[in-house]
Image 1 (cartoon, rainbow, N blue to C red):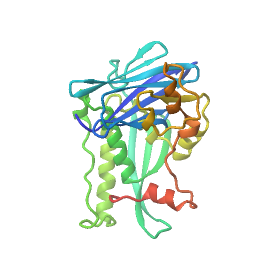
Image 2: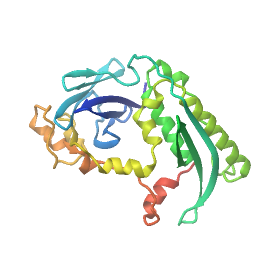
Image 3: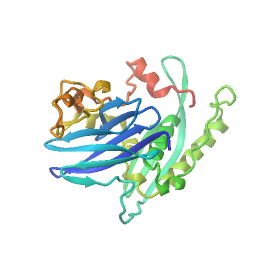
Length: 289
């Protein structure tokens, strides 16, 4: 099955839970490792015959193994002497989460470039706590893509709700009241169906989506432990910094050139603070709105 696959693991280091994610494009050979939502290593292999990627969190080490099994890929994380199961594939009792998603309104915003965009207000109610977020349609679309990549080759994939349709701007008026109101309603239905699927709410990508952007940035800046990832087999194509110490799990000295610390290579999502036009375009501009 070609496309992007995301594997999600959670590990405990000194009493604190950390997420380890691998995004693997099985068509292009690109793979990215994220620890606690921050990218720490990336590489691309045009002849994708598997890989071993060493990871390190604090004083704990492990390795992500990508193996080829006929036409499919098999992924495993061995961390601190244990075989860690993927979050989606883990068999455990399902705990129903009483979470309510509403998209009560939307508003038009004009960028400094003069372009108009539509921002939808998302309210998340969990127990007695409510969070209000501003999200664009493309943010919901990206969430849908990431969730589907996490369920790739899993029987629950077919149970995921269909995402609201996209329309080309040249043929459809995206700023008409009827269009925006219909899209608002469709997004609300989609989100409420999505949270009913077992394990979705536990995914790191879903939890990142539900956090205010300022809190995400603060978490990425306040790293309590050193984290890194490296691969000796793909060191020549790695985009990570070579200044960070190599993973202790690597037996090859060449792996040190691919090692990356989160503080050196983490790239948080761009946000618009009114002073960065490029970040403004990256956050609020796309072909579908």
